Length: 94
Image (cartoon, rainbow, N blue to C red; front, top):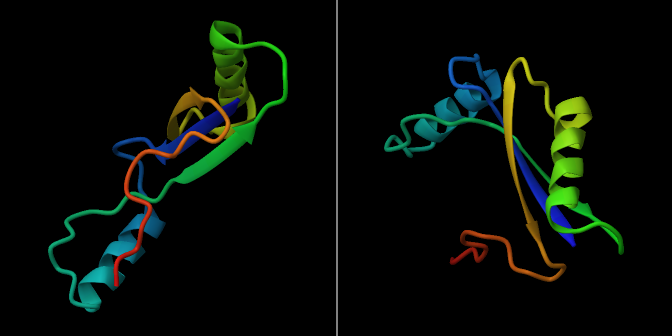
């Protein structure tokens, strides 16, 4: 089982990395980008053991205690079976 964790700055928290990326995109001609928020993506891989609600409670505790700073960051996660594709587009057309 895998936990896919996304950690993002809370709305209203200054995000200097996101602002720098947005500014660079504009300088490169991508002016259609209105805002960028820079976050973190973690993939936690588990062996056998607890599943379902117990595993979700453990991952939530990991996020609250170590992985995310609750003062300035929000987090969300999903539990998936090992080998399940990540959501979203993964190809890079040329």
